[in-house]
Length: 167
Image (cartoon, rainbow, N blue to C red; front, side, top):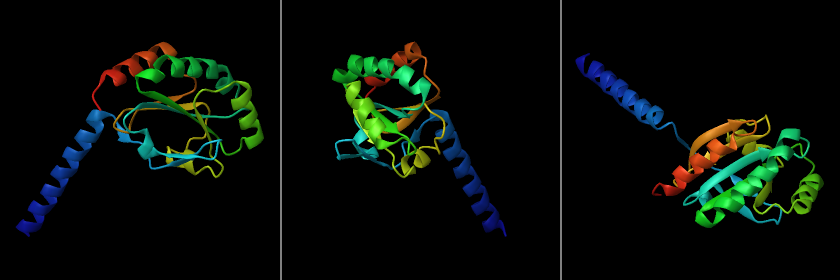
């Protein structure tokens, strides 16, 4: 009986330590995902490591998404040379022809993926509202999630901090 009690207490202590570490960082690993880009190439979550990445779930039918896209483009252009990348993920309900037209007509300077099956949105926390934007650090951990358009001044401060941090 005493051995079981010690085993139980040890398990509880380990769980408490793990929870404290997890909650203390406020970060979680970006979920394993494969992004199929408009050019037919693929990118995986593992490919995000080493760079600060903005992952933006959006749709051409989303007024807020279309309105924020110039700021996402400007942010990409501002930080790209310093190890920052952007990945725009079109929702499964967005017609692929609309996504291609939008990306080409606006000359989006970053990777655009189409989540045909909805599996990527599901993996990233069952994203349903657009825009939803994630900031992933160099270690591949989600640092921040924005539902709705981010405050771009705050976003730029966060990006600066993450770019300055070691990998």
